[in-house]
Length: 263
Image (tube, rainbow, N blue to C red):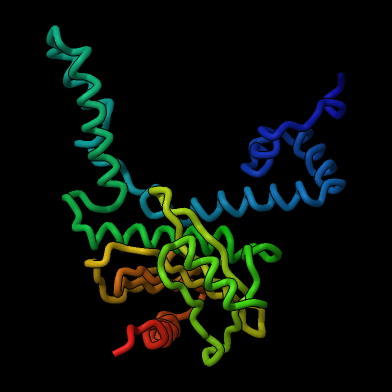
């Protein structure tokens, strides 16, 4: 069987999306995708997910691992004075080291507060969701804004919170629709996507939080994207777009006014 006759597997499609195929097989996959438009859209989604995750964690990935969290050094040090109970203790040491490394990768060498951790997770999810979904030219949403009341009810049922898409028409953006996005603990958040007359898009992420959490607005940047995040009344809010911080702050003020509790 020649290379051209060999069936194209799902693993090869992922490898193609990750640029890990040789030149010959890459051309064959590209030719195959021209005959399979639905599959081509899925592969485009794989690429968008890859790019979104790279963007979301780019800052942490480029930083060197602190020496005290280097697993090789930790294990070598213990091996040099290896006691009889090593086989039992090694697993505990590895879990402790991995826990410390995870805390460092979140950018918090010391134990972070619940609010700090919540804001960090909110920012990472908003940036990744914008890059993966909002940047998709054809499928940024699951449900259109044609029936706004149904869209609100659908998302509210899934988030177990009252969710209403903010109105950004005064800022020049119309609502395209929304979708559910998963959180790292198996919960759900709502992502709304807006577009102006030039085709530029803004995403607004609403993520349920613990009722006692509160955080003032914070601005952040990742490449060409800027964000504005805050937590109020048990809900995390995040705006992401390729817009100046001042513009995002004005949009945030609009959202705050619209979502303020009565009285």
